[in-house]
Image (tube, rainbow, N blue to C red):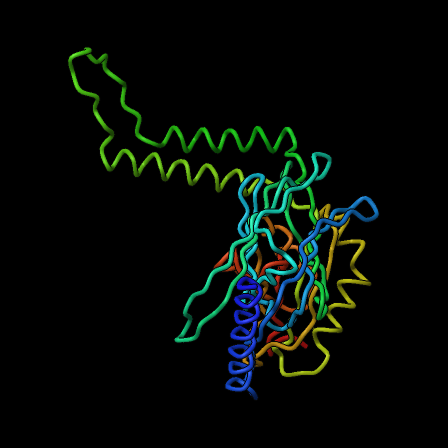
Length: 319
């Protein structure tokens, strides 16, 4: 009885806060809205696996979802969201041994952002193989879906090149010969500088390993900031229809245009292509393919804009 009253009060407070935010932000871009998650499941369909999140969703509020992936684990952050405790009573969801996922740990957080209370749901997903989630569009009012794609194995020549790069970094880190220590002497701890050097070498090694992982899908967002109508749509037809086969054959991955929209600002003087890690080659290829000149710039935060590998801003120079 107390549990149901507590849950009802929690949902009531969340909806009141969401309504207040929506009222305050009316007429402005990026209205804050709330999402109530009622079900989290694993779906196998046509030899593909999907992580499916269902509930009462506001698609416009889910653009700031974040993703962090390490080995066989990834963490998905869903903003402006809470869990319906009656529909999902347990914070730990295990899966059977024949499934690609082992388990999902659910965490809920509250934080103050710009003086506002923001609810956030974090899903910590443990998999049995290295998987990368790709957001499938569009997001509906009741469901968002992620395709779970297994990372492709590294080719022999890429592995050799990676090992050489790793070896060069490890060789660059200062290594001192260890002198024999008598039993009566105390153990000598590494100095702060040695610890820092070893940590930096380890971080650079991980960056190289990540850089050599070959993606299998390229998710592209096209935003029109040129001031001219239908520019993003025309480019999506050009890339997704006319040049699709050439792009996929040349890059060896599947092209998926997941978003076509107008940018919040039409003051971009020059067209720009933003790319995620591992997609520099793809970004340069698209820059050659798209008419005109484009700047190619890495995303500042690799954990933002989940479900987008390359984002194309069409500036005023694009005709």
